[in-house]
Length: 489
Image: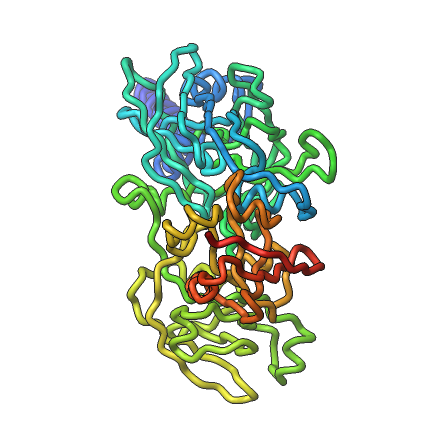
């Protein structure tokens, strides 16, 4: 082989080698990029935002604060005075309203815009009973708001304003994907200071069962150490992408006048489930058994000779309820609903509430050591504070509003389960009931010696005594009882 030929061959080999080496290096460089691209395509662009930076919360606050509103409400309340009253004020005010002469009450809270049409989510307790609701945007513009719907069980309410300009709409996230340790931000109007303030913390716990509205039911709340104070109620709890994962609702203070780092938010998925009904019906229709239930403990399970502490024990059955009509009794154990075993009382509540009124459910019960089934046609879950129908003419003459004593009300008034009677919900000033010394929260036990267990029985007994012009009323107030005379003319 000539020298020229060898030179050309060497050059060709060298060139090929360089090309192969370049291809190898290029492949190694591009491989991580291709892997990252594939991962981003799979997880979505939002995955890149999981990495927190110095500007993460600043960016969330800048973008989302304009979608958070301040809510001011006004309502006028009127009730009869009660000079002998010695019940716990908080209990009665929550159940019946405040006592005293007519007065205007104002309250403050927060909310957030969920669509361009002006719908706003907040807490029910922020706007409940309000005669006027005013919403202030972050730029100071005020609107009169209409209450579209509310739900006692979840403490969620839906408002509507008629916007004059484009609104900042907050995106609703997926609270089921929230995990403890995740960074979150709370936005709201604490103490009515004006303007929106932000606080940052983490999800401390997920699925804390707490009662936020109707007693005897619970919501699996999101617990956070992001500071929540009075006035924050109804504001959003946001994730690091600025999506709403909860509605800030309540705090535990242990006697402190401000946040103790233990706040709770209603998961946004809970609100999303009921939004369609709030928009169209103004309320949420849920199935109702009419029982008071408690968790099955290990010790209780032993008394029933159960191998494990599952299900829920029935403490009480509401008179005339679907459960009573189906033969459910106190001391029964609810083991399963429609063939699905119940882990605890909370699962029973959630399962029943997820069904519509009128649906027939099959309960597997344990009674006296034997399993049995009961088919229950569910009723409609009553809103908190719903009263029995009143006899308006009698109320006008006697000056008071009465309600049947329910197991729920008995628990609130700390009454024994065996007590029967009718509850005085309201007393009008200057009327016969006030003259007789009756007060809000009193329990009328009997009329002229005959026990009364319902409002109808009370008025029937009063009618029977009307010829005498007076009726002897036996009343329970707290842990004491007294007798008074009610004038009927």
